Image 1 (tube, rainbow over the protein chains, first blue to last red):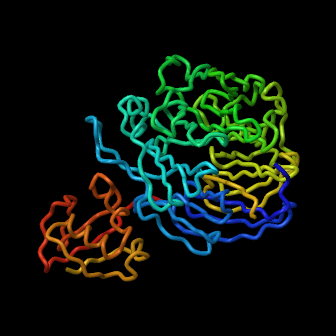
Image 2 (image 1 turned 180 degrees about the horizontal axis):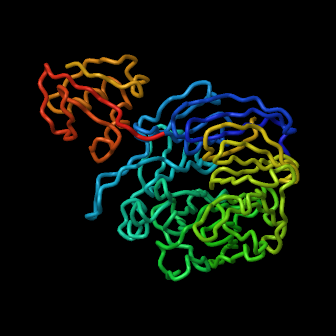
Image 3 (image 1 turned 60 degrees about the horizontal axis):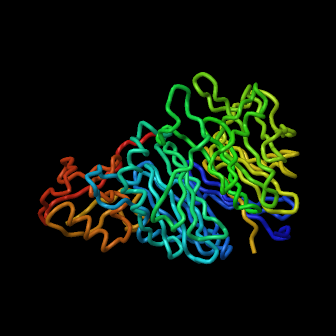
Length: 379
Length: 85
């Protein structure tokens, strides 16, 4: 992969709409374009890397049902999906379900233009083959009695609903997929989603629960390393992990984090070219789980050796009384020669971490609660 | 019959009062979908249930059963219920 000399597009999805920030490749100037869909809850906004111009936005409002909007001109105009992600009528005697919101969007394999995957709340997996217009449910997940048991009920998931997330397509093989469920574990398919097996070995669960029970597992975010697709990193409810395939046992690399910070958090970010480098943004997971920056002092942590050691990155960030929450989709990295990190807070601040987080700088304040941040180099 | 459409759905209809037909509420929403593609799924979920924060009034009476029979002279209002901040 070569460094990008091209402009950058920062895609910010919030509880009250979406914003696009157009930046130069030196990360100096940002031009804001938005709001798009003011008042809509946008869970994820993603650019199709295969054409560099198609945007998909997962949307709902406080009243209206969920849908997906599609733009083929970088957000100048939008068209709604003709068939948004929706569950099939109930089978196998299972209770009927309705999609509350589409939570996660993943472009399909480079060899399959127009293909996308979507994860929903409650947990469901969907696929489309036409650039986001019409979506079909994957029955091997959505209507499988075993999966449905692992998914549990609305009470078993995150506060705004249990989620299927972190849908990953192996860049070497379009039929090799991963996803995570909060709750419900990590799963892998080698046949494009027709059959699945679990990948939870080595992952811990909350004390007192049985780690062999899939439903107790709560992966928050999974990432595959572009430079080594056999390596996965995971931020989990119970620590930070790494998995090197064909191995099947996750290693808890978060044990090397400072004890007073811990290894709890939501996002997981991997370097575009170095599989030994990854970033997290720890949250306080003590007593009642505040899910805020430990001590009110926000910081990213980077490992450059696959999790053996971690380095604190807080230069430029508030040094006190900053009780940030960073959601699992709200931190990312670009693919420039010296990659910059980007993060959005639940208090509506957008930050850039120049040179891999060595120097943080604010891009925007006063946005609504930020749900997701993605970045792409425009062609 | 006349159907009152809330502001949140006017991106589909372009106006607050529209004409539609149907012998039941379900048939009315099917007709609305033909006229304004995409509208129905924002109000009725994939299991044919009215979404939690939507209300439908027929001649001023709140109705949640999509099997509710309708007459051509009925007044139907689709209304947004309270849904928080």
